[in-house]
Length: 98
Image (cartoon, rainbow, N blue to C red):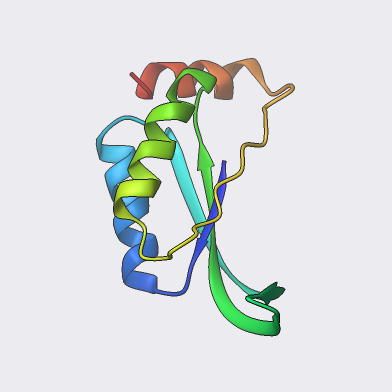
């Protein structure tokens, strides 16, 4: 899953909460620049891209978490399915996401 935020503190809080609640096996973050239209105007913003690695059975819980805890009025949250991966890594994800 993928989301963004404009704050280091919020990115860290999201990452820590999802991992500690065992909703995600790993959460990565990196700085990006987003270009988009918002309420009819062109916007360019520095943001933090948050990659949430999880199992498909945790998607609904993560959606609820983002809706309840994200500071944006309309937060991005999109699901990118894992089509394939190394068996060891996928097994580790199953172990840590409960």
